[in-house]
Length: 90
Image (cartoon, rainbow, N blue to C red):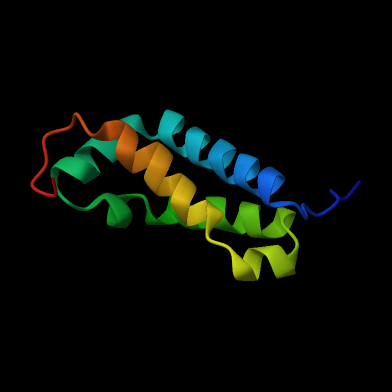
């Protein structure tokens, strides 16, 4: 049974944050190494792209095209939560 597309900003934000949380949980070591070496978006490219496709498939095209909830969730959950990791990027 196909999912009904998400049409509210609140639900889209929740989905984006859930996907980012899963990425963070299952890729902890890659994230730490990526932050340490300033290669985070290179080492997580496939995972982030896969999450973006899932997000895009679940959110209405109108909402997806006008918002950046997924990108914000990646920064808030994956990057900001690792502020303790030594890195030349901060």
